[in-house]
Every structure is written in structure tokens, then in C-alpha cells.
Image (cartoon, rainbow, N blue to C red; front, side):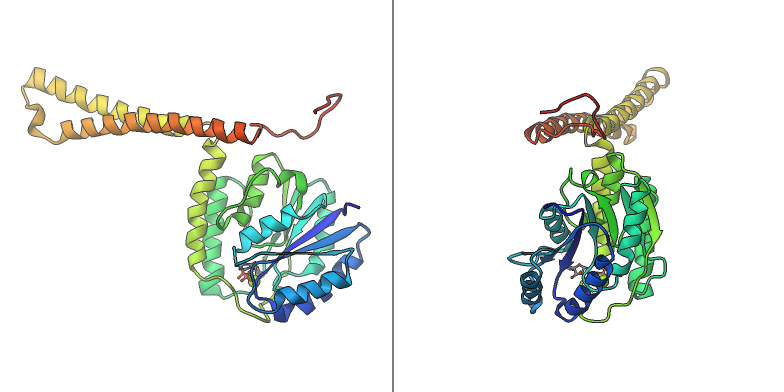
Length: 319
Ligand code: UDP
Ligand code: MG
């Protein structure tokens, strides 16, 4: 039987928290009228996390599923594996350290039912170190929302609810789980942001430091490129190329006129070299765009990935 809700939780060295986590999860989900499962992904923990998870899975075969990685692959990979191994129509993601509160899940589901595809948790009252976590994260959030045009306050909060169909069409790399709402938005999902509770970490240690913000910003370049140009890379590369060639033509024309009408030597200034350089760069950029176009075709056609997303079909059968 396919459950309605899949709660996906990545776990890395969280042995002290797991008992409390299960308590809180059972308490929150028992009140739901829908069917549910919890998919826990052990991300190569070196402590006893996996054996604790297994004990719970044995006790509650109906609800608890465990996937164990061979080594630590990172939170994003763990989340991706959890989604891959889940079956629910609705997927809720959450951290294992109880900084997120499972008691918020029923509220997320209610809001989802109001007609949204993503209900995104926002740690409005965040309980993390201000200098090393909250401030860098606020800057990153501002940047992401500006660059992607998807306006959320808190991408880093894992606690979010998604309809399966808006998040299964893409793969997650690097630190990219925080961009899931952005990808969902790009396929036409309706987003809602709601404040959720946040608690300080009680046990274990945070797995990240300041360097994560740098990674997130780098990921943002990739995401922006993929979102805007992945179907038509020639628009970016070709556009740049034409701009450079235009600049080069302007410089060369200027030099030509100056030489012919004002008798100023062409090589008397570095403008000629600049013009030649811009021409070569522009030409290269267009060629790069063409190669990228080939890549895009390989990408879509090898995976039979359509270049559009369908919401529903009426009187149309699709084999
Ligand atoms: N986590 C993971 N793999 C990792 C690092 C973290 O699965 O390599 C899990 C961790 O167990 C927790 C969640 O990801 O459930 C968030 O980690 P953490 O609390 O350290 O991040 P923060 O709350 O500081 O963003
Ligand atoms: Mg945490």
C-alpha cells in the first residue's frame, strides 16, 4: 500500500537524538488521518545511528524504512536517496537533529491542501549562532531570492513539504537540496512560505561551518545557468559572442577611420590588439554555445526528458 505522506530524514552521527526524534515524529504523525511512512537515510554515520534506526525499523515494519549509505555522501545525497526510496504523494523533508520540529508537519500538510505544491518552512526565529550561521545564511538567502526570482526568506531550512510530481524531475548535486523549491518553481509549482519552529541543537554537533555559504553561492551560479539557459545555451554564449564581435568591429572601424582620414597609426595604441582579442573571444564564445547546444540535445534525448512539464491531461492518453 502506497502511503500518502513520506517523511524523509537524513541522519549523520545523530545517535543521541534519535530516540527523541522517533518520539516526536510518532507524536506528530499519529494525529494525522492520512497514511504515512518515514524514510531515514543513514549517511555513513560512524556512531551507532544505523543500529538504532534498524531497531526502530524492525519494531515498526509498516512505517519505518531505512536506507544506509556505504560512506558519508553528504546531506544532499542523503535527501536524494530518501526521495528515491519513498512512495508518498507528498514528501516532507526534515533534519534529524530536532532543530526542526515534527509538530509542524500537520500544519504544513494543511497548507499544502489549500492548493499549493510546495510549503516551505521558514525559521523566522532561528536558534543558531548569529555570526557564523544566521548572518551568512541571510546574505545567501537574499542573494538566491534575487538571482532566481523565487522569493523565500529561508532556503536553508530543511523542513518543507512538496508534492512528489514537482520535485522528481531533476537530480541534486553538491549542496543543492536548498534549491529544490527553485527547481519546483521552474516547473510551475505554486509555493507558499510559512514560519516554523526552530530549536537549538541539543545533542551532537553541527556538521557545517562558514564554508557552506561559499559552496551555496557557487551552486547558485550553476542553478541560475541551468534554469535560464539550459534549454538554449546559445542565447547566453552566442549573445556574449555577438556582443564581443560587435565591440571588436566598432574598435576596428574606429582605427580604420582614424588611419584613413586623420593619418593616425593603427598600432600607435593597444586598441588594435584589443579589437583582435575581442573578435577571437567572441568567435570562441559562439562556438562554445554551439557545443553546449549539442550537449543539451544529448541530455534531453538520452533521458527522453521533455522540454516542458504537464499539469494534467484531458481526453489524452499517454503511453
Ligand atoms: N547530515 C547528513 N550528512 C552530512 C551532514 C549532515 O545527512 O554529511 C544531516 C544531519 O544528520 C542533520 C541534517 O543533515 O539531520 C542537517 O545537519 P546539521 O544539523 O549539521 O546542519 P544545520 O542544522 O547546521 O544546517
Ligand atoms: Mg541542525
